[in-house]
Image (cartoon, rainbow, N blue to C red; front, side, top):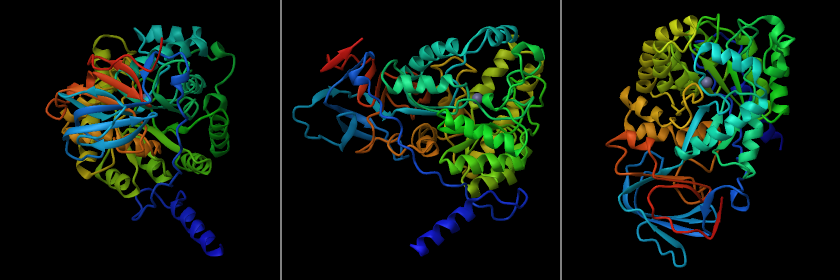
Length: 472
Ligand SMILES: [Zn+2]
């Protein structure tokens, strides 16, 4: 007993945020956080459109199982009660509904580690401001209902929603309860950052508009004590993950895109508090200094990671910090800037950051940093999440590595032990695409079949028969 406590203490000390400066020789690994079982999803009993069977077998697929193994032709996958029961050639499956999928490739349901389901791209900067002062959280949640469905039908069966508000939690729970169709969600609620920083939605608006300064209720605080309370407040209201704004951003007004915002001390406190509550920390970070400090503070993932140097990449690799590179949105915001849909400030930042983001992605990938797919959907229309696969491949990633990033690697980052791979025991989250996505990665953008927890939400194959249970 005494000995095991000593071991535990040693572990805690080893992963605690370190007092030494960033760039120290041997940074401790990021603090481990126990895996969290995602909320059970119960659509079969509820009024969600979807077809399900007690037992069914998908026959004769080319299997890409999400682990990085080469595709396996001639494979059957048996699903029982929403879980994968067996995988192999010519499975005996007497009594199971057989669905012949020859000509299709079967993959794990995709995972997007960076979405904003309650946001949509406004037509213009001014339209975005108008929305901000007019809309209530209820408006945003109803938009999220539509976006959740679009995301699921695009093959994304799990998302990590990193910053939207308390509507995030409402949408997560409505999906888990089977009230509306959508991906399984982990949510951050409000993102946490500094007054006037990227996470402060009230920048450049008249102070009287909202009647008070944003505070920890909206994730805004200054100094370790306020930020500790902001973390506790988001968790109190159901956050599964803590999202922070370590640096400025493209769409926020008045802040340098790469400028550091939260201090190293502030981020250490945030990570300490989150890890104590068994939550991971995702850090929005574009500039190298902010990224380096976030890594030193022990965050579990760097979101965007636009300006990386070799030293920062090496620190991420040593600590096991994930990169969620959001490569597609980098291109998309430049198109928005060219179309005149961003403020002048944001347009200039979008154009400045895009080439740096591409270089940094290559640097991190070639160095072997763990990469999880994250799209930043919400900045672009939901349902286009799959374009992140092809954008990463266009930047030099191997197609199989991109698939791993959007399946098992993202599952590891999210701490979900039973999604992201097609192996027995996993939840039956499955996507089929026509033909070979390794040869043409864009095929992942057009799934022919989407199954979550054994429920068929999309069937363009025409091979799925009428179901044991069907509702609309
Ligand atoms: Zn984002």
